Image 1 (cartoon, helix red, strand yellow):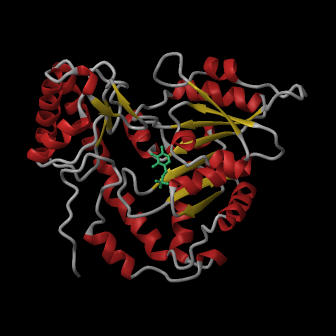
Image 2 (tube, helix red, strand yellow):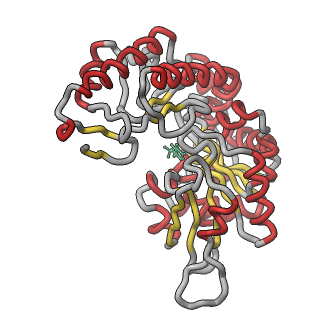
Amino acid sequence: MSRSKYSARNEFRSDTFTTPSRAMLEAALDASVGDAVYDEDDDTNELQERIAQLTGKERGLFCVSGTLANQIGVRTHLKEPPYSILCDHRAHIYVHEAAGLAMLSNAMVVPVKPSNGIYLTLEDIQEHFIVDDEDIHSAPTKLIALENTVHGVVHPYEELVRISQWCKENKIPLHCDGARLWNASVASGVTFKQYGEIFDSISICLSKSIGAPIGSVLVGSKQFIKKANHYKKQCGGGIRQSGPMARMAMVAIDENLGKLEETHRKAKELADHLVANGIALNEPPDTNFVFIDVKKSPIDNDLLMEIAEKHNVNVWAGRIAFHYQVDDEALQSIKTAIVEAFEQTKALDKKNVVTKIYNTTSAE
Ligand SMILES: *Cc1c(COP(=O)(O)O)cnc(C)c1O
């Protein structure tokens, strides 16, 4: 079997830059080969059932990506336009899914900045919630979507329970973009079943954190998943022989879930080091990300690229991502590289400093 020389040990750009293990690739060779579009693939069915059981939901639906799982999940919740979706202003479904909410769901989005700067509270939601009072000027909120983790932050369980109870009382569905629910669960001790009780639907990533080459699973009620599958097919997301992908994902869960704690520890080590060197962070480093506050602590992007290359690490300024394949040597190198770039940026003419942050590029 030929393997590329690419290695993820020094890769901090995203937690998607993992490489499948030999065990994953070998498992793919023995996978079932039925047609999953007709629900005839054993390994795909097994994976779907496994994630559904884990979350206490009736059904799971294997999707090629988190974007697809989120978009069809959202679409399924929405029935009668005009309507709007309320979410965090940093939400992937809003910022990073190519206007899917506008194009696929015809939805207006109300992006909300948490008043505590970190996570949405029930009060934030109530303040921006658009009531369906038959006012013909408005687009009533018909879905609340939360991301957990959002920018690596674990949404506190007690707050989720409050939000969920309020949504149930008001008959508003609650979707979770749980691309990194694995991380949230490991960091907080809240089980997938507990999260399943809170949310009506959850999309769970298999490639972020867990390290499978591909896939997300959307979970919900039987009726919900049946309709979501209809939208999945409409989006061209039907996969025929998805057995090898499903089997690789199951190996990934078995092999890598237990490694998340160590991944979080590494991220925390970097975060502590940066703070000790006067670099401000945007969010607390609860899990596998370190978000630098590049407004308070500018780091010139070109300079960082140069210095990172010298120290043999790949990184984008602003957001440093950790995954299970990052090794200790790379952790020490990234600590040195970022502090060096930060110090050297101070010497530059401030007007020319370009700090690339996660979702935009800003000059300051
Ligand atoms: C990456 C990501 C997605 C989308 O996953 P893709 O598989 O890249 O489409 C959704 N939500 C969050 C929070 C993500 O980080």
